[in-house]
Length: 419
Image (cartoon, rainbow, N blue to C red; front, top):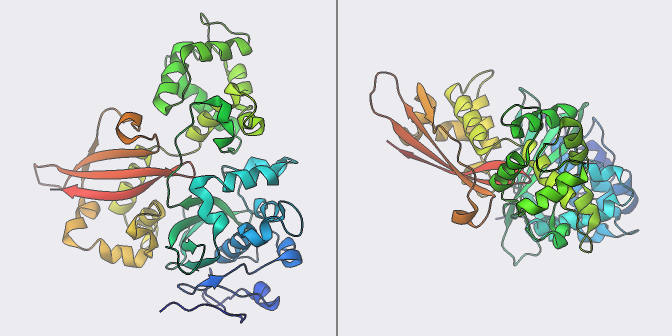
């Protein structure tokens, strides 16, 4: 039976099994452990205001602080957008909304970001509990993820939220939060651009890589046709006339293309759509925001390739690394998302799933299938199939993946194996 915490101090195991959250405990705050229900926020007022990124905080400490900052009692108290300002401190540079931390109106815009319908569980919670153990991946970079269940009251159904954190400069920071509902499809009506989410700014390397991807003929310019093809692939509601108007904004007509300097200028308008709100049209900012989001996350195929490779060499570079990678890519609705690497490793020993560990050859479709708006009603769901076979066998088996996009990242909902 789940226990409801009263005003008593509780500790839990963090990154090191011998260290508890002494900073929060010393201040008299309630601490949340696995499968223990926390009612209301740990921190309020001055204590929350004093919670700054620090090497002393473990991943669960940061989640506790973020949950407290997003609670309705802290959102606008003791001053407007107070909790959202506190939360912005803990976003890594790769988080979708990280750029808002630099804006004077950032806390207000972050409030709008969190209050989108598919993110409301984070804004309306009054009870939460950690579901399963904290999992860390040490290589190639230090990541941690934790499944959390939230609900507005004791009579409501639990909803799952997955937190992904990265160690940045010795401090744990939030890189993404995956709510059980996938991201919403891009709104094709640009008079409603407030529904778009802010994005993290692209580095010069990411901008160049995105430019080269769109410049399919390697001419050094992105033609109107090339941009139109990219728009159609991403499900962006822009017709050729609108794109031609954007070309003219950068002093380019339909007969020539956008060079890298102009493209970089376009990408730098990525958050103009967010700033514009409901009353203005910001087509360039809308396009740039969606292109930027597409550049900062792996494609469905890349996710599948990463997971398949990690499972095939599941104990490299250390024991249970492959299982940790696989659970890291589980969506909040995937039942495996709450498993520890050790539990997932045992799960893979079942005969039905051993193929994921034992394949020797793998084939993907020649062309990667873009998420289909027509078949799914959203560009935020995708399917990916791979053919695999063991050494010494002639027959191929099919492994089918269903994925959905959360916080701009593709995660795995389910896996089906046909032998």
